[in-house]
Image 1 (cartoon, rainbow, N blue to C red):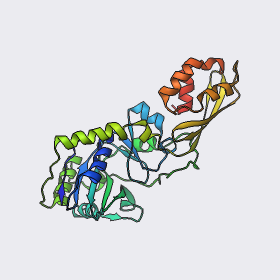
Image 2: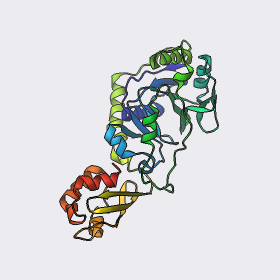
Image 3: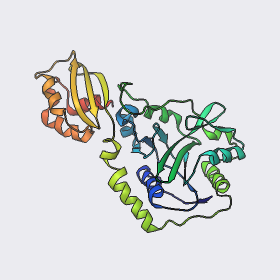
Image 4: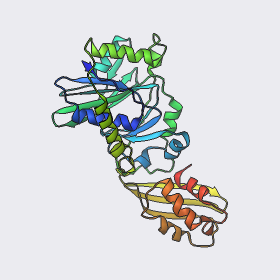
Length: 318
């Protein structure tokens, strides 16, 4: 199978690369490429960013959030995770599972769009059809930071009944445990590249195409409207002990907009907190947006001794 090379580790660019190749890089034969992302969380097309991802943790640790064009659940990527993409008339991840088996890993496809090894998930994949072509892309966890993976998908105060597609938590494993012959992910990537290509050559992908991919990234995949604005309705509840007492905030979101906000608790304040809640309703649920409005409103007038940073930390869970 012929292949492309994509050295980028920018998840927004890489989501754009997938869409561009599916819709604009036409080939009579199936082809594939292997790629990686810097630390990031990739959510499915139909998922709610606010109920699926610990956004406060992402912000605190510089982890990027991206939304892909295929369905399925949220996944964590870092540079010790290898991604694969296959595009063509009829494509399946079976060649990837077969390649792992050739390397000594007892990999098996499951009915839930996963690859398992000895009862543990090492890969998840998703599919999209576009006209007469398909894309299948997925992960191969080699030595992923499993502690970070757990934290980024541990969402504080998110109701389970949030609309959208919820991620299915599975028992996961790293392929490093099953591949003692490799000292690094680079070695595994080279081996998979050789097996999957089976002697076929690289396809061209010049600077003009890369510039087109970057334009898609800038205009779509890196935008708030795509990443957050696609989110269906969700309800969040945050609570904490502040200088004024215990404060609980209930948030109703719809496509990333604060549909309703309600404050409650045993706190002290000079003005009714409902007035501040009304000022927040209708805004984007985005820290920079709320920070400007709260700074102007002065939260200490509603919550004794509480400033904008403290209230923002409560609202966003960090």
